[in-house]
Every structure is written in C-alpha cells, then in structure tokens.
Length: 34
Image (tube, rainbow, N blue to C red; front, top):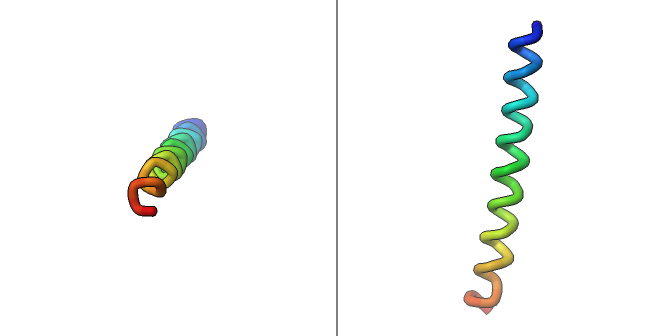
C-alpha cells in the first residue's frame, strides 16, 4: 500500500511537471506564432 501510494504521488508530481513545462512552452511559442 505504501509503495502504491508513493508511486501515485510520484506520478502526480510528474504529470504536474509535464503540465507546467507544456504551459511554459505554450507561453514561449505564443509570441513567435503571433
């Protein structure tokens, strides 16, 4: 149960990191596209 909880929290952190990176890339590419 502990390992499952740990894996879930790690996965959540990874998805948050991916979302933040995606938002950063989106914001950076907006001026170039516009």
